[in-house]
Image (cartoon, rainbow, N blue to C red; front, side, top):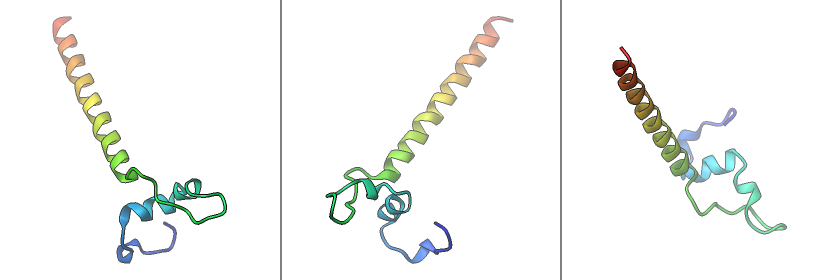
Amino acid sequence: MGKQDGRNRAGYDVMVEEEMGLMHITGEADGAPVKVGVAATGIANRSLIAFTYFIIIFQISRQDFMLLTR
């Protein structure tokens, strides 16, 4: 976010989409940027949660395999 302080800016999801350039690729070619239909922060959070669950399951299965091979 550079030198700007984001605490006083409303609409966190819109701010994130604008700062990362996602709104630049939406909307009409000669018009203003448009908010993306899906919340970018929601997608990022769900992806992180899914990845975390994958790592947990992988570690549990790895530990079970190590116990079986002893």
